[in-house]
Image 1 (cartoon, rainbow, N blue to C red):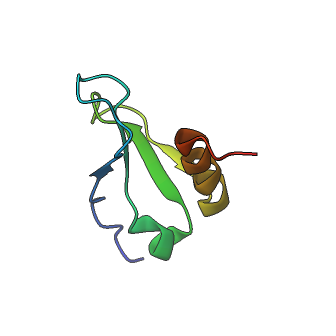
Image 2 (image 1 turned 90 degrees about the horizontal axis):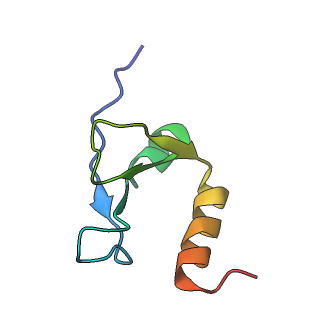
Length: 68
């Protein structure tokens, strides 16, 4: 079995600069496992939410205020 590489986290551009609402995601996992890992950047050792690419697109639309 091929080992899963360590995620390369990217901070959301919608995260507040004051330390609140910090969300990170690891875009490279979409190609590896067809999931998008999402976590709270203030708790890097905490839980990671694994969502489908479609669900992640919905989260992004909601954050941008463009969700239906």
